Amino acid sequence: MNDVAEFLAYAIKLEEDAAARFSDLAESMKTYGNREVAEFFGKMAHFSRLHLAEARKRSGFHTLPDMKPEDYKWPDDESPEATSMEGSHYLMTAEYALALALQSEENGYAFYQNVAVTTKDVEIRTMAEEFAEEEAEHVAELKKWVKRYEAA
Image (cartoon, one colour):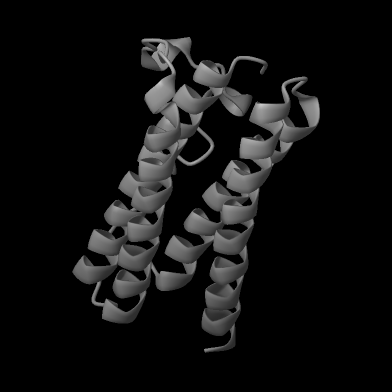
């Protein structure tokens, strides 16, 4: 990826997906009676919305491409942070929800890392590295929660 506006369009979509996923997981955990994990996912949704706002702010000086869902060329054909909620059902456990979230955040991290190492554009590389660092923080936090629930 070597066009800043295109990179920002991808980053905005990815962060929109992350915020929506965490909000969905928070609601699922409320439904399934786990307020603690619901609150954690709510906090993660908030952080994703902050990252989304940052990406949108950075795009203020660029004309972003008008991209439809089919225009995005994602690894594995879908947004890295779009967790499948098909596994969401009345027996969903906190462990499963945390695993879904962790996988998505790891995918988001890998996406940004890949952009950082493959782009020829210095501005994109810098932004991708910053965004990857934010995703790495999410991954680390989720790993703590996964470990905590494995031990319970």
